[in-house]
Length: 190
Ligand code: AMP
Image (cartoon, rainbow, N blue to C red):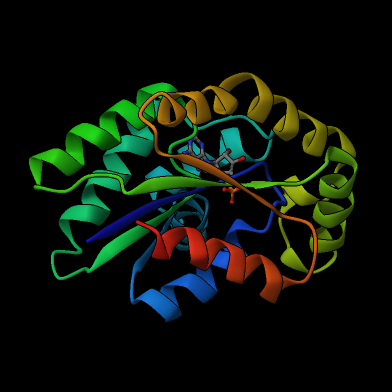
């Protein structure tokens, strides 16, 4: 079973690559950002709570995210494995994910990090903001907050997997297909 953490700052291309990877490997895409946006669209209590953090570019509290991921895993019993996209974003989330998986006889195969310079990220997010309808994609200050939150709170998660010998980075600038091939060759080495 493959369980991959696709890692990288906002705008690195995790969503785009995840879509291609789930097709190739038959995995379940678990994007916490997408799950929150679904709740938001449905107007659930969870969505309303998440919005207060998301619209500011801040992280939703760990216990809320972890509970939502637990539900999604529990409801995906027939899955061949997962691509975790935008999760874990804190070390506490990474530890909770490890515990969740091992309870179900699973483990993380590896983390693949997409590396993209910050000026490229800002341009990509602003470009996406023209069509994504996401408040957090449209405002320079919110974009900067998200990059700062990534550096302060999320980057330590890379170290967490590196310490377990499960970290690999890939250049996230270039043709989508080229990046996809590079990610695929890392996955094929697991
Ligand atoms: P994304 O689509 O992954 O960029 O996520 C959009 C927003 O959802 C983030 O800026 C956070 O506010 C929230 N979010 C998504 N995933 C997480 C997570 N794992 N932990 C905390 N907040 C999250």
